[in-house]
Structures are given as structure tokens and as C-alpha cells.
Image 1 (cartoon, helix red, strand yellow):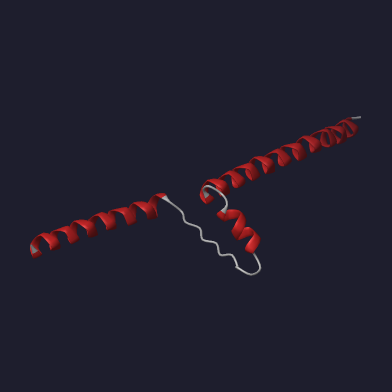
Image 2 (cartoon, rainbow, N blue to C red):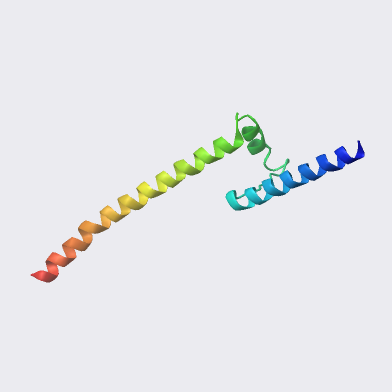
Amino acid sequence: MADNKKKAETQYQKKLKYNNAYNRENYRSFSIRFNINDEADLIQWLEGREGVKAYLTELIRNDIKKTAKKAEKAEKAEKPEKEGKKKKKAK
């Protein structure tokens, strides 16, 4: 019986080692802390979400899209200015 227990522990350790290596190679982990006194509203808000990871992922993706649109608008606004300057120089 002790032999089976030892074998089971060894299998568990192998699986754990494999999982840890896989996670190190395929995932990136972030940690955040909130102060229960100063940020209670944030804690309460996050605890009310069905899934914190999904909620934060959606917020970040929306922010990425919003930032890209702002950059695109700024780029389009700069183009006519640059083209106008080129035309003046050509005259």
C-alpha cells in the first residue's frame, strides 16, 4: 500500500511539474490589490461581476479599440494639413 501511495505521489508530482511548465510558457499572470478602506467601491463592483477576468478582458479590449480609433482620427486629421503644406510649397 505504501508503494501505491508513493507511486501516486510521483505521478501527481510529474503532472504538477508538467502543468507548471506549460503555464509558464503559455500564460502571463497579473496581480492587483485593492485597499478595503480606500477602494471598497471598486471591490464591491468587481465582486458583483459574474467573472472578473472576462470583465477586465472586455474593458481592456474596448480600450484598445477606442485608442486605435483615436489614433486613426488623429492620423486622418494630420494628412490634410500635410497635403496642404505640400501644395503651398509646390506653387
